[in-house]
Image (cartoon, rainbow, N blue to C red; front, side):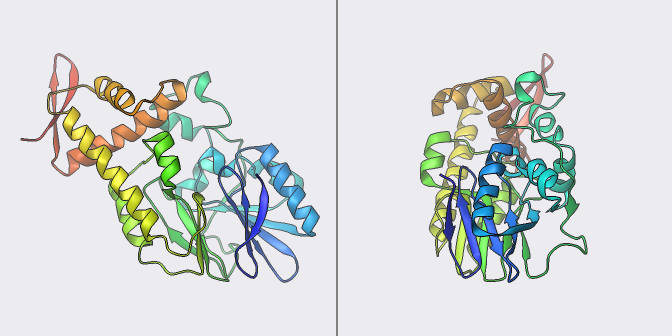
Length: 293
């Protein structure tokens, strides 16, 4: 864990729970793509940079989930580096309480206010800033989170962040977090058309061809959608639906899983409702979901 792997002339990644990209410039300055899940991750990555004689210039965050921005504050306090993120992701990076609040649907209670769901605040600019480094292509990858984006480095390596997961990860967690299901499916279609020297997802092995992995993730999304349609053959409220999802997939509920899986199931239900596959009725002050006739 935390080994440095070179994938192109000037592009590397640190193999850790959410891969961290590194692009090295001619002056031995480097840009990080994401920063890890906390200050300890930051320390370990900084040790790598120091060993190589590299100086951190800036962090390019793909999105604002805590496991991708958790090292930001450590790096910014210790190096003064700039940080960039796309759209809403920059706002959440500046105000990380927004992540657990969004997931829970209200003020997050104490078991949700921890480093895995809420990073420390860091100063962050949008990728549209004139200070954003030249030579990097910002690739919108919406779906997993609000304005998530990947980055293509100047030597044609594409960091895909969380838009795909490995088959092993999908098998372990079953219901991967998704904010916008239709946008996520559109992103899977999009990445199948991309060309690069190599693709580096955050939670899967680097690969030359991303199409097989995209299809594995697409099938999982459609499987979950079909399950929800089946569950809703009889009218059911949200809590009953969520209980069935946890039971059928062998998941164990706690505060964190309730927020993550619960938010994702709501996103699926919204997508199914908007596409006319489920309907909603209000009976005895309950909101009931039902498969469309």
